[in-house]
Length: 310
Image (cartoon, rainbow, N blue to C red; front, top):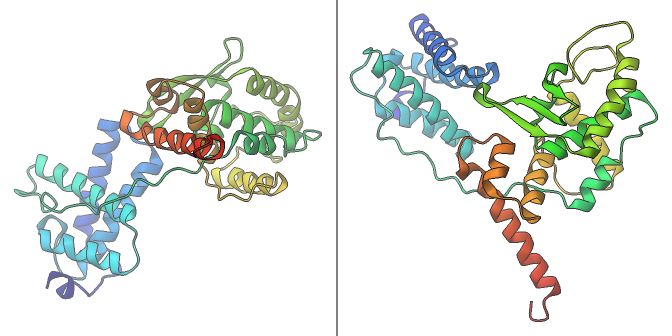
């Protein structure tokens, strides 16, 4: 019944709701140091709910469980996937727990709302041969190709997120020790070894390609465009897909493909799971454990192909 009663929508949330959401985001930033992209995701989720609530005439602090369920149900009917719905519920739950802590409300309307069941899809990982082909795809005769080769090498050697890669600054590189200092989610820092191949291509790019791209311009960003600006995630991802075509890779790719390949290949070669967790910057070991399923699947495939009774 709540879902039917809440069909009308408003163009914008009530001013009081928007103010509470911004106060919540400020508290998150102060207490947890969350990145701007994470705060933006929370804002999008909460403002969407506030707009929907405004169509029912209900202040955001007065919402009950029925309205939360009604909103989630409408989103699902509109095609929202389980993972998206679970993230939305997580945003609402965190917001209402903050309101409860601040004594704005007496009861959390999300407390008994169950998240949708999400299957653990296995991440796409390239074979070692595919990775080799992808790394060799850029033409390193020009500064752009040299930059792209260095970026691909570093992604595969370190398992960085694409956002971490494009935001790298010169101060984060220690070529003498062969490590990169990464600032990941929640502003957590970690040191990751580069490896000889990645270090070699990085030094070639910095001493040759980067200087050619920058000209007389100055910037602390490591990877720059022909205009001297920093690379974006979207621009780099476009180039990865282009190189995948050059390399003849037909498998589906995602921005995390080389990160997934990094973790999977380490485990295939005997790396300890906790070491992989530290390198990836996962705060919880359970997040890393999905890669053990990928490694196990690969072993099963090898057994089926090569064992006489496979």
